[in-house]
Amino acid sequence: MESSNNYNINILDLSDEMLLAILNKLNMIDVLYSLVYVNKRFNRLILDPFYIHNLDLTVKHSLLQRVSPLDIEKIDTICKKILARIHHHIYKLTVPLYLIESILNIDYPQLQSLSLVNFEEEKFLEYLAEETFIYRLLTNQITHLNVDIFFDKNESNIFLLILCLGKHLTDLTYYHHFSSEHLGHPTFDLPLTHICSTLTKLTINVTTFDDCLYLLDGNLQSLTALIIDINKISDSLSILDNTRKLPQLKQFSLTSYHLTYVYDEKVILLLHRMINIEDLTLFLNVVRFNSTYIDGTHLYNDILVFMPQLQKFTFSINTSLSNSQIVFPSNDDIQYSFIEKGNRHVGSYVQNRLSMQIGQCHVYSLPYQFDSYLLLCNSFQGGIFDKVRSMKMIDTYPFEYELFEKISKHFPFLQNLTLDNFDGQKDKQHSSTFITFPHLEQLDITFTHVDYAEQFLFEKNTRLPRLLELHIGYDTLAMVTNNFTNDLARFNCSQIKRLVTKELYVPPKDFHFYFPLL
Image 1 (tube, rainbow, N blue to C red):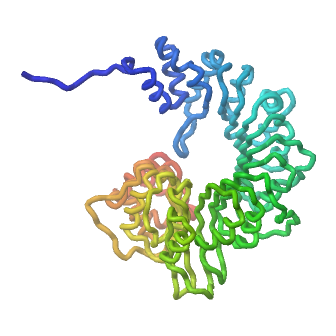
Image 2 (image 1 turned 60 degrees about the horizontal axis):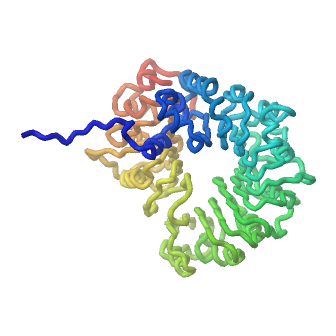
Image 3 (image 1 turned 60 degrees about the vertical axis):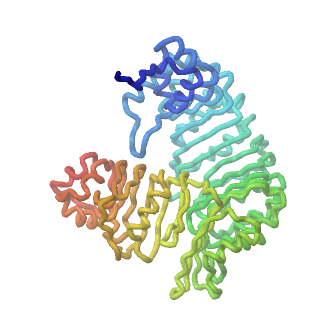
């Protein structure tokens, strides 16, 4: 007798709880467009206030993928046929600029949180004018605002205008996209005086350290949490006070990717002001001269001892030493410095170049909580880094096959990788198996030896099924592809939609067969 263990399960046989769990994994735009009106049960689940209270109308897509005509059609259908049925249940709303006109004439009585994505400076100012949709929400209703703005001139002081209009605002996320000419200048040029702000939490990116001092100058009196990303922490001629205590501040997060040479003079002094801080996050890239690595002893004696209320400390700190007159600590020394202070949940690695009197040390709290990982070198010890999406590798010694194999395993969701290494590989691996970076979308190998182009572009070495953007020297690219005629790199280049090179070039006849999507 033949028996069968195959069962046909209809999705409608699942419980409401299981269906909702599935719906929560899907893009809300697809759910609203495809499943509303299918049957009464789907209508009941999808239009339930608990499901649609957080309405996100942005299209989720990969790097370089534009909003398609089909996406526009879906969103237009939702706005015309469904939004009027659910508007009174919406508590949080996320909307891109191109869609703002479609939602203007609907009332949102429960709306408390508004996110505005990809707005241009001039256009956003228009929507802050009196009696507009955004103006009314900001002055009368919302408590949470998330703004994503592209600046042209940065002369509008939109930030101050938001603070003045936001009568009920307690939580503001304010993200600027600056052009290169703005990066060396302060973000703000008007005082915050006479602003009666209700703001308790601010998440913001700025260009200079002076901007951070500006925000903590005492005028945002209700502020208890500041999450700030500073383009570059450098010295200045600012007369802003960096000594007055900040007793109201409970949470502080400081991120800066660029090298800073004034950590001890600027950052440490600022942290000493936070006498009641409970939650501290630091992501820093520090250069020190004639000093030692930032380790457990330094963090405790120079920072933590001044913060008696501290409950949570999350950090990733790179230290580069140059011309140091002290003995360079080993990784064991670094680990002991944390253990001695009672902290065993710390990762670290050290790379000392004693002959050159330079060295590098990376210390980070575990589990690793950041989406970026800076300055990975050959001394990397491994670990679990499933939150990391962007990484930069740099060394004066070659990166070998084994290191890339380790990275592919320990950084499973890596999307953006930059290499800086002009030393060619000494031990080229010719394995029957290749390394796979399943999520890598951006690769920058502009400042590298040609060996790394072969390592990443040749399918026999590395497989990059989702590579969309490549930065590389044109001469290097032409060399490794034999003027775009061999097949070794054809697969990894086939999906590329953006190619950035140092040199100008005229594409040869075989170029577009290699890059059909350019």
